Length: 219
Image 1 (cartoon, rainbow, N blue to C red):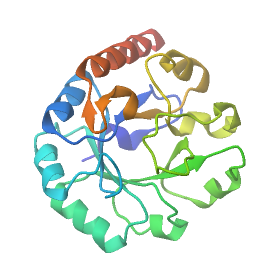
Image 2: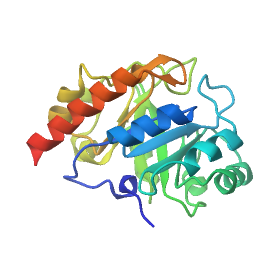
Image 3: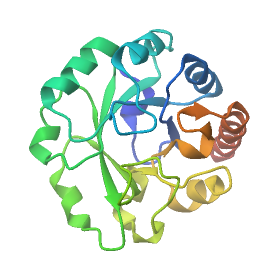
């Protein structure tokens, strides 16, 4: 069974992944308000780390058509597969230095993340096939969830409407992202939080309400 987040394509209405889910209350609210995907971080150094049993409990309660994305950083194939089986993930996101041949090993849909700075080598993306591409801001100290953006003007025009854009996206710049960058999807975490791993329900509602208004104008 396919979920909405597998089908990112040119011209599709902007989709949203809300990452760093750590509790069922936040997960159900995000799903109810219209999120297309929820992200669960299995990187132990993250402030939003979640254990397999906790993620499995939340995932069991989610609607079937919402994507459940497991985020991993330079993790082994065996451990990722174990997590998939124990939790019920429907998609995985590789957020480290995973090589193209590693990406090809998985049967589930894969999102390959790249952390972008001003000297990023855009040609490396071409080596990754049969996966979705996520662009995030580079940080020396954290692998993601920093709340900062990179220079979006650096994104080649040829891939803008195919990527998942992450880093520094909020309700304040959503309209610009929607109308000017036009990515296939956006990925948010810290801008919708009251604390790391804890969503601010009012911010979630306001962001998704604004996104739904923008989507309706586009139709």
